[in-house]
Structures are given as structure tokens and as C-alpha cells.
Image 1 (cartoon, rainbow, N blue to C red):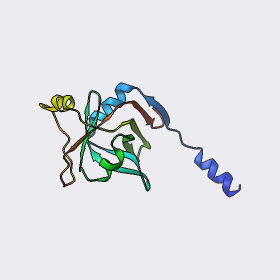
Image 2: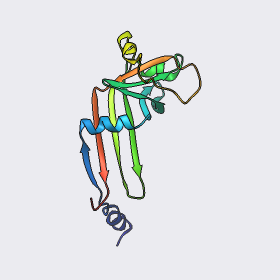
Image 3: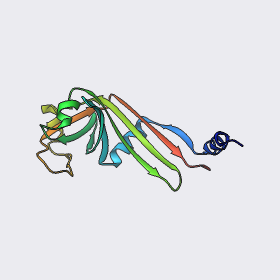
Image 4: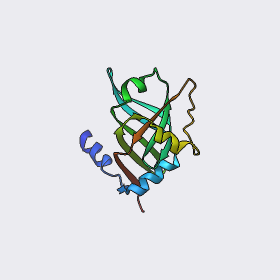
Length: 148
């Protein structure tokens, strides 16, 4: 057996089952976490950074610094946001992807947050800009371990 044949015989042995998550399942997953990754384009190419967030009925809300990269490149641009959970032992997990145009919160958005939860960044600095990523597109996938 050649090296290539040996590689493909081993590579083809995965037995987990990949299934699409419903919108409700994807929303539940987003609700279950508080840290995800924001992806956006910069002059130097793509960037992916971790951010703390909250989920509202119409988007993902996070805070950032006014003079930072997110404010310069992500605002008013199409961005992606991703969370996941992976179980390496069982070779299973799930991933949720949201896509939307990042925008500053409106006065109406702030009114809806007034008596509720707000995003609390772990990083220091004056994170006074509140940004919303509307859920224009939302998808999720789950890899079920073999035997399920």
C-alpha cells in the first residue's frame, strides 16, 4: 500500500454524523455562551478576535473601544460571528455562525437594554461603543459521535 493509499484509508474512517441545526437550536446555543469570535476584514486581511457578548431578540451585542480596530473596520461592514463547543474525546461538537452588518446601537436598542443584561467585557479599556450584529443569516451544524 502506498503512503497516499494508507492516508486515505485512515482519513476515510471517520464515523460521526453531521447534521444541520435549526434556527431555534442555533439561538439556544448562542444563548448558552458569552464569548465568541468576531471575524472582519482589515487593510491587512481578515481578522478574528474573541469578544464577550449577549444575545437579544434581533442580534448579538458587544462592546469595544472607540479607537480600536473593530471600530475602524467592522462597523458598517459585513462580519461573521462564531461560537462552538467541541468534545475531543467523543469527537463531537457543534458550531453556530451568524452573519450581519455590524452597527452602533440605536437609542431604541439602548432602551430595550435598559433593564436587562448588558455585555461585560473581560478586557480592560474604555469599551464604551456598543455594537450590534443583526442576525441576517444564522446557521449551525452539529457533529454527533458515532453510534448515535
